[in-house]
Amino acid sequence: MVIRKSFCHLRVMLMMFFSLFLIITAYSGSASANTTSKAIPLQPIINAAQIGDSITLAPGTYLGPVQIDKRLTISGEGRATLLNSSPDAEVAVMIQADGVKLQGLNIQQHNGGEAAAIRVEADQVTLKDLVIHTFGFGIMLREADSGVIVNNKIRWFIPKGAASGKRGNGIDLYNSHGSDIRENEISYLRDGIYLEKSRNTKVDNNRLFHLRYGVHCMYINGSSVTNNIGEYNITGAMVMGVSDVMVSGNSFRKQNQNVHSQGILLFDVRTSQIVNNLVEGNRVGIYMQQSSDNTLQNNMVLRNYIGIQFEGSEGNRFQKNAFIANVIEAQATDSKNNKMTRNFWDSFEGLDVSGDGVSDLSYAINPFYQQLVTENAAYQLFFQSPGMTFLSDLYTNDKEQWSTDPEPLMQLDSVHADVGQVSEGQGAVMVAGWLLLFFSVITNTIYGGITVMKKWSLMLMLMVGLLILAACGSKKFEPLAINEEVDICAICNMQVKDDAFATQLTTKDGKNYKFDDIGCMNEWKNKNGTKNIGKDYVRDYNDKEWVEFSKASFVYDETLRTPMAYGVISFKDTASAEAFVKEQGVGSVLSASDLSKHEWKQNTDMMQMDMNGGEGHMDEHKSEEMEGMTSDKEMDM
Image (cartoon, rainbow, N blue to C red; front, side, top):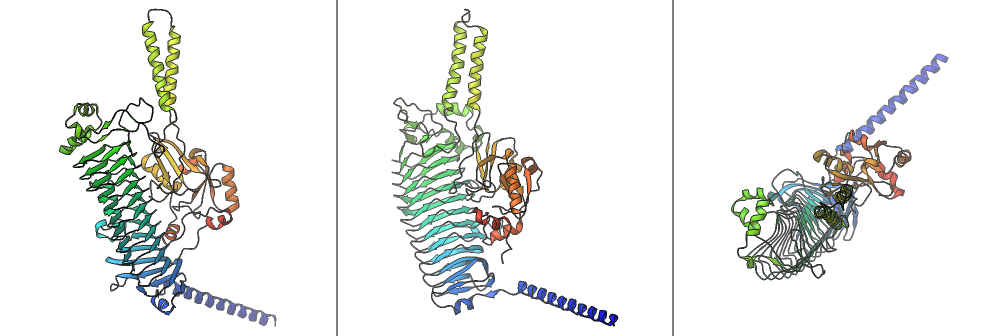
């Protein structure tokens, strides 16, 4: 009886295990089937909607192409992806109805040539928070007025593929007026933003990298190009055939990979304002051709080969600009009646008798060096050599034709004062030191034969003078404030946000580099070494206070979300780091010396999520901190 009962129990248990095995197998098969199922056609969903409907797409992959011919709002919330690989469809999304809103959708356009991810042929269309990868164009507007294109990421599929001239444009407008194009990030395409015959368009606060032209404008009267950041393009902004245009607050840096690279190129531009721009490290900072009656004011022209170049341009007003560390400051050909006044030239030594901050001597730009290297480029080797300086001083041919600033500024005004790190009072301290040394030597010479000055007194004065000079030569490497509109990571070229992940370092020669992630700063150190670093800083995660790198403590875990997914965050002391680990339940506490042996690697899953529209930075709100600490599930592609 006991044996029979035990056998029954065993049989029941075996049946239960077998049933559980079937359930698990069926569930696994179902999950696998869902994962590998074909993309969902999106067009039937659009066809079934009524005018004015809002469609929120479930996470997943959808199949294009699609045509939207009625007013709809379609949102993917960053988790829906539209694929278009049909060889017969040049456009992934065709919009032909006014008032359509498309947002939060990932679009992959596999067709090249003139094919576009989105083509708009209607008015008042909004395209927002889209992530577009394309083998052709990104967004096209054709005779589509009052469009809003905001906060989209657009890039070519393969960054190191075909030359930029063979790719499509990121945002391309033709005969489309009154559009608002702002806060987009575009890279590795032909032109970032291309505008033709599109008046009263606003191009503001976009980020443009590795393109032919960052912004390319033709015949866009009454438009504005403001607060954009462009780097590593052939030309930052080309503005052509326009009048009454505002180009202001832009930063165009490192356009130097081509002999024709410029920060800002102005061709046939009239009655326009080019003000408050930074052009740094370009082949030519500002190039102006066949342009007249424009105002160029308060621009920072920094470390370019040629600061500003005029050709066939007349009647322009050029004032209160700053020229610093350019090889050739200015060059003019067939350009007359340009009013150049009250600019700052770092190579000019003026004289201000009246003390009004304006030199009483004019500054004539000597063209000797430029003419010499034009005839024989090999003479560039002698740039700023004593012999070249001596010959330039002797050269006075046609001096009345030289570009001249009759009232150059003696020092940078407040608009440009924060360009370099200059210790307050440093010039006065240096002068005092040299004067003390000078008078001590003179005194010793005059009274050398008289025992008025004892040897120890002379030595004391010499030592004091040397100490003053040494104090003058020592630099303070204080951290600089983060400016989100201008600052770009020196490694990944992404925006540096004013958050707890920002880092920075200043070299001993005064150059400041900012980074959006401590991992990027580590990569910079690996490439450039650490001997020339004056000081490097990280931020305390809790209060964003700047902390010297060597004095900070750090927490690492691969699930910690940081801008470039290196998973390292910083704290001002060990206690704060340990408290964070205890509170969050993840992470290891490291010192600065530990980081030198740390295996730096990015969380590729987290990076892939960011490519699909996820947020790469941790949420700074304490109430949501826990959610930001661990990686979310990978979003559907």
